[in-house]
Length: 243
Image 1 (cartoon, rainbow, N blue to C red):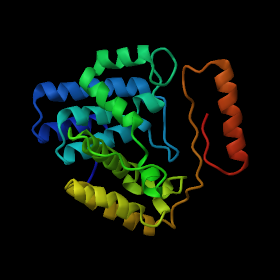
Image 2 (cartoon, one colour; image 1 turned 60 degrees about the horizontal axis):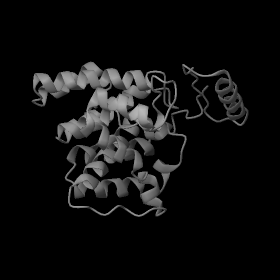
Image 3 (cartoon, rainbow, N blue to C red; image 1 turned 135 degrees about the horizontal axis):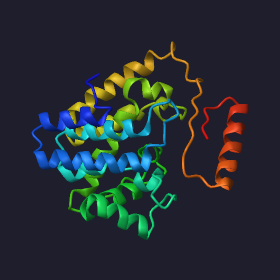
């Protein structure tokens, strides 16, 4: 598979080699600091630090030569979904929006808000929601491109094989993603999705049952007790868990 950046230094080098200006590279560097502050305590179920996934999504967007605001939004696309803000809380609320705008600017924060409201691609695939109509601004297309890049990194390096959910093993899901990739001429994503398909077919040697644990930060006592109890329950039934 063509390599996706997984560290901010690799991402900076990729951006520079792609022709980003010095100011644009420094914007990405500052955006990484924001992403790390929001998500530095998180890991995925396969054990990969969550910030690596954010960097990988951004790397795919750069590979597809997307505009800088969309690239920057990709690095913090999960801010409102799972990021923990300086308040200690999560979610999209007034003070969180103001803080993110102060770090990224109103345009990039607006794209992140639209990404937050956009349906999950798996829900689109299952027909549970309709594909949003284009509104003439191109924004729906931009967000679909971001979502495909997000999925490409999600499945990167056997990530699809280690995923605890069922989406990657649903017949036709990769074809569904490739349909969007063809619609928007995402050559890098098309190649990556073919590699993901091959990795899924060669995953018997993996052990998806491997469990990873990590500790979050800034949790209140009630939240910690709740999360620990949930993790213990998942452990009892053999599922991946964290607390």
